Image (cartoon, rainbow, N blue to C red):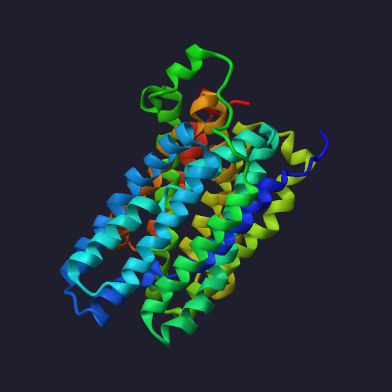
Length: 386
């Protein structure tokens, strides 16, 4: 199987997503802005952040529906402009009502970008190359996240509101870039009217529901890097800077893993085998967290988990694109993406309960066991067959 170059549009999407992610460092500071700059109570801030999180779920579904109706390019540009307007509103308004409106508006626009960008990959990239393309998009996010920390450090010393202005500028810059580089039109409509009609409700497709269940389990584990991992490092007496090193290590692993995904021998392997390998690598790395006590041990485990993540993310997205009717790819991908919203609600509770009841070592052993169970589950899912 000969290695083929990815379409240029995929690289434009990666570039735009990277720039936008570098600008999207304002969100973690939203709670700080509301408490320190505007004097809100912890309860009010928590309720507002919850409202944001809930708004992102219909945001992704709306992105899928608009993409299939209006086209990929128009939906992506509209979502980015909506984010920019909301960010500027957060920076400029001082009233509580105006702030809440801006936060909810940001949540409703925040995920619109995702389904059409993922659907474009499915539209333009051969099936055997889609895992690498989806992995490349994830790599852009990871790499930009490392650089974002430095930018945030500079701007927070000036004024927190400038973070939101910078984010708005990055959204507008990406909207302008993609408006002139992405193709016009609604995307492929498919040749089978009956298949297209069947795809109008992805929630009734058992293949998608099976993949959604698997993805939710993966996402709950994946998000423990932002919840259980920092608490585990603290419990074992490692400095706070250790987390930054591990996040950077994870980003570099994603970058280093790209040539592996594009290797001809890897592309010949079945999707089931790649997913199973990804889950087992994650399980091995998480088991490494259970026994790690030094920075080098945690870094090694992070590399193993990172390679597993990369395999799972790319191949699950490809599986969804493969089972979706062509005319409704974006809608399927949007429904599939709601797993991240569900996991964002579940992950902190799962991590906290495990750490409180069992301790650090057992927590990571349980999560490793969950990944092993997902590896077993792959063989029972016809939706992920080649």
